[in-house]
Figure 1 (spheres, rainbow, N blue to C red):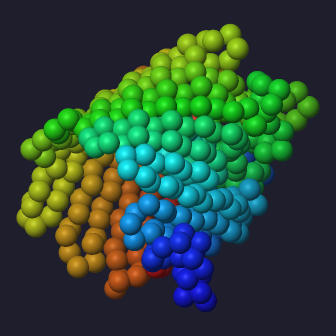
Figure 2 (tube, helix red, strand yellow; figure 1 turned 90 degrees about the horizontal axis):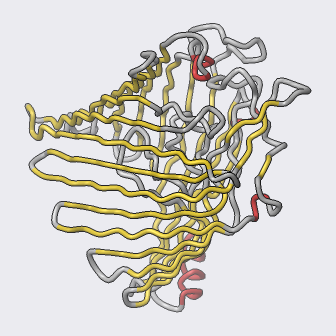
Length: 391
């Protein structure tokens, strides 16, 4: 069957090609030692089956490329967490210095690790990862000019994806359940309001620079309370955003900077955000590699704007690679609000077994005072164990 698919796709591209299959399938087990904060929530351990395979086909002359990366999670506790997505399903044509791409894709503009204020093209997958590192696939058409050490990319985004959120039984949610059926848009076209973006990037020696612009439907929702029940409705405004990012590397030290300015809603309210980070890697430290990370995040958005926890926060973290046969790694970090000392802590250890299997353990803790929106997570300290098979 795989050979037939390969031959068929090669015939479609009209040239010699080879298909590559990567990705993973995994079992996640998640347990919460404390009773839930809200009575609708389940206090039972949760299990998920997760799969994210990727098929990639590229012509021998690199002119044509096809990608397909679906995602599926089946969750035993929260029906809202059972969901699927096309993270990527696109075709890219490369002719000389020009590229034309179309389909569903994922795009990363930022350079910071804990939070990237310049990310604007993809909607976060809120139900899959509270840290917003998982993104929904974004329908797009892209025209790029890539002559060498610099590039210009233009995007047309015909449809805006609405995020999914945990349901009543789910953990890691706030007091009010976010509706997934009622969604508000500022424009009469709703999610079909076209959005447009542009990005210029360049590499100058050890320095990477990026300038971004976006106009259209926000990929971040603000929340509107309902008078008839305890649900809140996500609302997506029109926004106009400009961003700048910088990354410099030298002698084991990495410096990262992101700046973002945004006009949001028809009233063109302004908000700004900035983040700066430092990383230093101690290479071959007793046969291991240790990277220390520190970041400062500031955000001026008011309470009625889309929610962020990175308004005046620092992030401190580390990555420790033991460089052993199993590729053992230890990751750890804390996000600390410098005003009221709210904190989110995550520690993760991972180890490979053989060529295909990987076991990882993740511990998450939430600490702080009662009252702020994030205080809904104070009883959601939890551990997660994942056994994954990589293709």
